[in-house]
Length: 364
Image 1 (cartoon, rainbow, N blue to C red):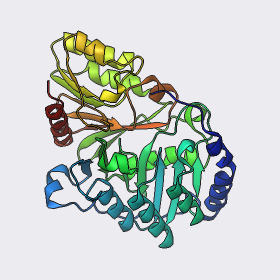
Image 2: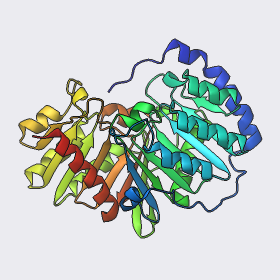
Image 3: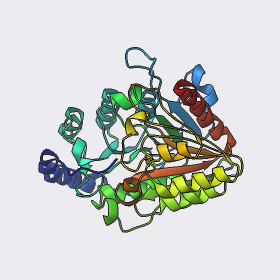
Image 4: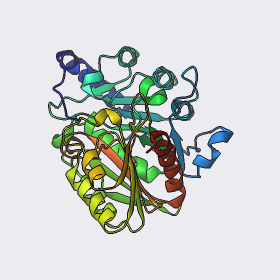
């Protein structure tokens, strides 16, 4: 999906938002917080198989009634449990539960800061945050989206995945949301956040490569990558090239020739490939569905009447690549995106269960 120019309305409110954020940053200061211990998010009994001591994974469920019980609920509970700070980088933010949690955190005296894509800055929920005194910095770049989706809590953990903080993404579109309980991972995300919030640097303007970092979290390796400055596509291709048994993926927008070429090459070498594309992206110029189908790969179109919004790959049942990054040129060279690579059979098993659910719905 390619970038459209920012709307005039969004550009008109940039100056006011930036001034407000700059003033409040002077009061709060990025280095003034004390680390605290943050427990894993609470989950219902039905979600226990999706959690571990350092992670929790949630998927949207379109069968839920009343727009409650979705992935936003554990996120909101985690925000409510925060003691010092909540930093949010969001392409879109209109989900009432998240808005209310941020307002409550601000009322409790926490440092609450938001970075947002300008095209969505005029939403009523965002304006309510601003009116309450929460600093909101908007992406001022003309080329590319601020497409990140992450929340840093107390500098001790990060929530990320494919889910925008909207009603559609929380309850209609297929999405994933993952919590990573690691202060080291959170610190790398915070450095990226500060580039945007404190420095006003987005997209190609970002001067530092804060990503491309690897950490050991409870015995599992976790890598953190950001685009457009870290070479995300090259790392994904490298991981795919190392596949020995299987590659599974669910993809909203898939137009990257490099990533598709790598998958096709591994399929030619005998690696099992199975993937589902969002049907609405079928006419997207440069989409890779038809090419993979022609080459005989097991690829399908999703059956969700709304969107398959996932962007993840599982390799050999032990490596998971997930985040905000669509497998597209825009994600690689223009947008602000975040990616985590998790080396864990336990985590991979949970994502593979979601693959099989979506594949089953898609049919032959």
